[in-house]
Length: 292
Image 1 (tube, rainbow, N blue to C red):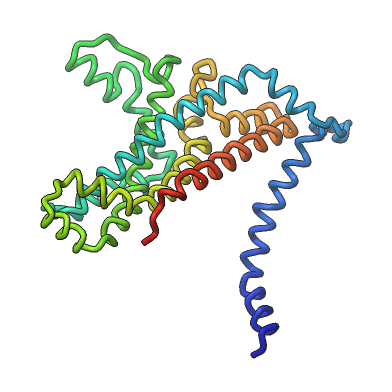
Image 2 (cartoon, one colour; image 1 turned 90 degrees about the vertical axis):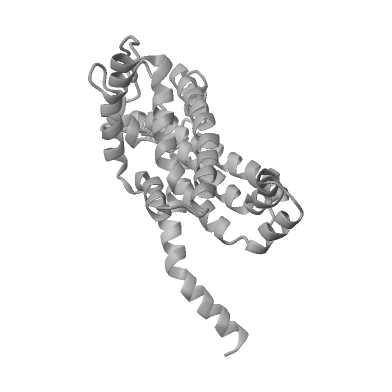
């Protein structure tokens, strides 16, 4: 088989995946970008070119800035906590423990639960008067009753707790696989040199976990900007948009207010934020990542 035939064979193997990627990823992204420069078509009025009008309206939209701020705080609350907790759980269940398999299953169980089911479970926990959290704070601790999801100062923190609880077990699996790939000889050599457990983890284990951390970090950033299910079930963006995140706001604009062109502009901004975050992560963390 000559070189040309090999290349044709390779492209034919890639073709099905390339067609699906172009049809369901690249084409929608380009179509969304183009649609953001047009007005929303109506029954008796076709879409017309408006240029950057949707983006100009975005800069003057107070709800957009509030939602963007909510999302940034949500990302800052969920990303470090879920990654740190996942690393801690993976380190724990990687050791020699009685019932280690059961403990791993318990940590991973929230990941396999449907997001709607998780939201309903935590909705019961946060319910005023008779919810589990109310029973602890009011009945046991004697604190006053509090509407956790109905108060702007606490609703976002409640969503952060739910997200960390669900994502940490998923990220733990990747860290557990990475820890099991570390040669035991490194731990033996560190013990011979008299290194403490913390020194061994900080100087040996943590640097070797950087490829996994980079992968997990990219996924955690994406997850922090794509939460919709929990918001629909638990808060619907309230109270007063205190729990509304960017993707949920896009959903509201597109399917509640039927303003598809403005929703397209919001989507492009979301894609730009995620792309910028990914580029920054790879630019700064790639230098500290060791693959061997």
